[in-house]
Length: 246
Length: 227
Image 1 (tube, each protein chain N blue to C red):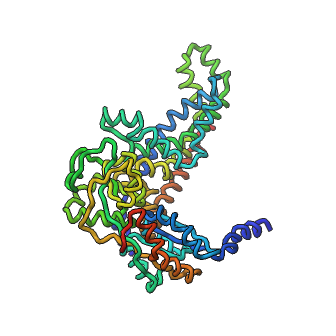
Image 2: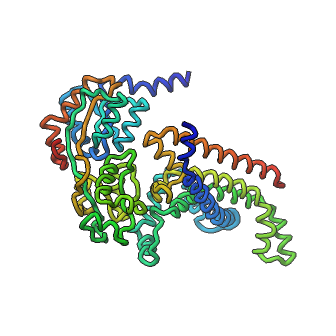
Image 3: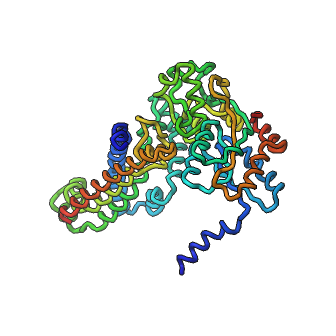
């Protein structure tokens, strides 16, 4: 009897919020999406948004394992392509809604002078924070740029791999890594602690696609949210945080 | 497929896990025995509070410990800055950091085992040793320590097992750098995140087998020891 009650009490929140939409979004979208939530909820009375922020690869993995997610917003096309290949997302709902750029950052306090990618090879640059290549999009953009500059292999011993872009930001802002690769929008959040040394090119364009998850039980509401992301109101918030148009 | 998986199996995370656990347990053993003796035998003022502080790692989330080490030993801290300036040394992103984090979580287990073992040692035997003109230190090494040893050893084995499984605090302090600071638990975490379930499962099986072997051996040893 006790067990039954416990099971019921655990299941209740699921029943009570029939209009709850779960959005799995790339870590770099954290602040912008939190600000978007009340604006979307205002247009859909009774609907509430629930966010799950992590590295895009991790989010896709959760969806593949059957996590109850309605909308997936990735920080790169490659992760979304993988989702489409595995039929985890409704491909016809896919839509790009934002763009970003890759930057090299250093701590404001006591960082070595870095003006070009080649400066990362200097001996006073001991640790360079990058996203994990297998699961974090910013790590893959970084790999593309450093491979293009013939530096990736040589810098390996200095690389510290982070779980998501915000962890890279954290490592650099604490000064534990002398340099790191994040998106411009992340660097702008901690202007007092990190300095943008340069904008990094030579990688696939950083664009953010969103799509309805194939197993979503709120498909209609999920479509509305994806459409909302492309609308003027959402675009204004994204622009405020420094995201570009796709 | 299985043969293919074995061929790409990397033993480095397991070797590092054992290395970290051995050093962390050694550190916890020395500190735990010393503190255990102090808590069991002395009337140090503020003992109760100090003991509670030492036991904290048992109940605190590993993230709090990791954050604590970052704050106390990170580059911006007094100690971390000094070490970096004078010795060009840092425990952050270094496997030594994982040793410190693991020793912290393992300390309460040795400490508790040691302090209750010391409390149970017959004081008359120590007194007898003193009447035979043995120094305090000699009495401690030749009488107290051997009598308390089974309790200390039991705590130490638990501490070793706990150190082997440490994840959260080590990850925050040492990071997950393949070949340098990536322990088995971190390698499993990475494999799951990357969708490499086959690799994660294999590592999980190997570390489970190693742990069972250690527990079986320690049980046998404990049964044989005269206690």
